[in-house]
Length: 373
Image 1 (cartoon, rainbow, N blue to C red):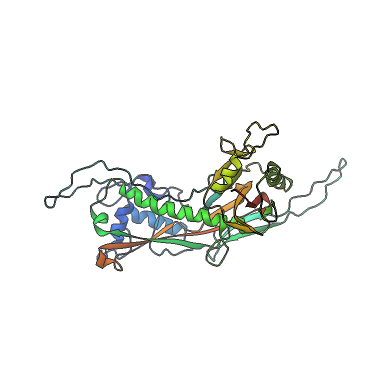
Image 2 (tube, one colour; image 1 turned 90 degrees about the horizontal axis):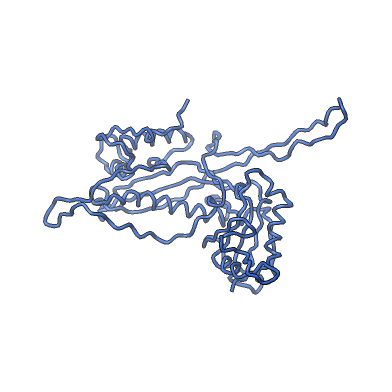
């Protein structure tokens, strides 16, 4: 039986007596085309982790090597050089100033993500009960009616999202701070997470891009006006009502919440939901709408067009446990030391295979024509 513990969680390593998983060490290994182990193969602990992940995802062939998603212990190396007059001593570096990215909201509101069971085609699947057993009130010793609950399944077909970054050979070999490795890991993982969140909201559903929540057939809609309109508390309540009458909020583990564009948030913060003008703002100072958590992200559209209305914003309510992000592979890292070799750089390509499905579209309601100006 396969253990659920990855090798690096046992703190083992066969390289130089080190006991921490190091992405940069793995990158150094696979960037060296002269290594006897072969090009684009990790060594030591990093190689063991790759082999374990490859066994778990046996239906997919990695382009490079697999990286675990739970690396919490990184190799730390001092920023030192001993060549020439410009030698650098140990320093306490300032943190990297990160790129401002869209806020991820799906996971925060309860969307589920994880590895799925695979069929022989390498597709993931999730069983779904489409009808429930019928109940019958009966007299004593009388049998209830026979019923046959129906089941089907939701199929997930992996689509690859990728990014390419160039890292200097100097950085890989010697000149990185203790924070550098975490910056590499976090930068790659964050960029992919933000893109998956964006596609989970607005994905068009093509052969190469998953279908997002807003484009899923069966999502319930509330219209504000022929050309869009300023929202009202009644319309916000109608969104909640639609989900309720569809039993979209009935699950014991339902995770109900809202998200919208920052423009939608600003408008709803100024919308008084009280009858006496007491300042009971619809989007409360506690970050809730009608008692459920509410988040804003620039991944939510704010450029909608309807009739003569433009720059219309979107607001979504629902049970986010009904949105499933299927990970069809670990993070796949491919290292190319040749293409940018004349520039002294190693090209690193990262890929994540993923598919996204809304398991119960009726668990969501959307307003997409909100006037916010």
